[in-house]
Image 1 (spheres, rainbow, N blue to C red):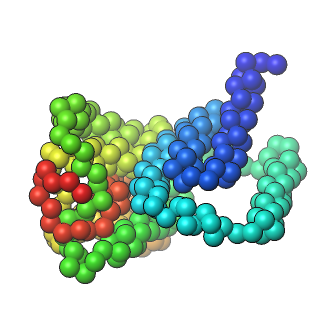
Image 2 (spheres, helix red, strand yellow; image 1 turned 180 degrees about the horizontal axis):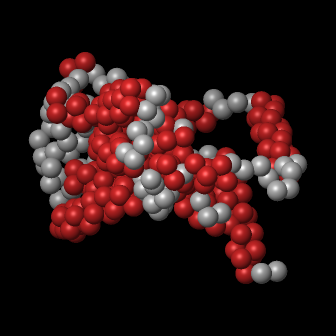
Length: 319
């Protein structure tokens, strides 16, 4: 047995163990912690499968952003956990759910095991059609050229999610500043971290976006890093969250999708199809879409973490 096989087997067992832990644990907080650890292990597994782009997305969005949102939800639901546990489904329903989950698992395993050898793949087709896009990263080429409509919808769907978060605010607070971010007591360590780390984080975010044209990276990964730096500054109290009534903020939220749609529409006249790129201009247009979308996605992710508006709160007050 090789060392690589031992590592893969250990990762598989750890992932299965954490999945069972998340399902079996009764406390929401412990389940969320298990989910975050599960996502980090999945990121490592994606690296082992040579899918670095997917690993970065899993670590940034699937684990980082989603984990923080779930931690916030668990903290808010903690006072109601005991009452909800008393009203949990009966044993018969839980057994039925377990059997259905096991059936789905076995079905997926059967699909994987029954795949022909070699498994069907579109990798060669992607490689043959990548040169006209001008980018070297096949993931970016697929996302921004061959399935650009899907990518556009994935970017736009964040806006309804943000509107859904805003909609839970009380009417008097609508248009005010987000109020869900924690405001810990003043700390020199936190302040220093919020002053020193963001410049490096911004450089990393820009590098991920620019590097995504030819190597692993892209707008979602870079935007997540930028959003994290923004949230760090807000939590440290160095800046206050913008009021949601500000027109510049709302323009920033939609400009990425509008530029994407505008470039796509111009393709109808310049290249004969929606989201088609004129010959020789594919890479500059793809980079332009990625750059503008990064700003919109970063603002959207940051505001999702900041939560619904709660009025205009000055810096230094606690929530």
